[in-house]
Picture (cartoon, rainbow, N blue to C red):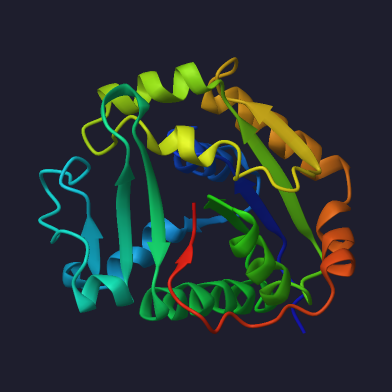
Length: 232
């Protein structure tokens, strides 16, 4: 029987460069690694289930405003405050949560089948808990934290057409809870190629430790039954 694949779970705030980093890890690795993450799964949901505040709606994404029965079942990004002090938060309804629960079990099944994976994620605690439950039988899960100064994240949000200043500010305190990693990189200091090189060097020479510790610490994970829940 083919041995389990290993998973590199890359976690950080929006605009930290996680998706680019997963692609560089994939390119530099001396073995096949499947690069994926929530960005590949969220588009499975029809746009009528994605409600975006008008200030954040990308031009190529004709999403409805939040507040309809459909968007409340799916994903909603809501705005709090105005001007420079505004922040955004993402709410997840039952349909969207079911999608993400399925995503994590599908990724676990890929690893069980022998695929190595590198995943990009915004892992606030509620998401982390479901990863712990989904991946608890995977022997090698590396927890990699991606750090980047807020000033740089907001600079990137300001120049990227599909981002809005305020998302990273809302996420940055939540995304690193409990903040324990096997390895960390700083995409504000090093480019994606260098960060990918560092990650692979660590993974190739060290066993994962943190994920199993977190599985033991959190214990049995209760399923989410009340919606919506706040992702970030």
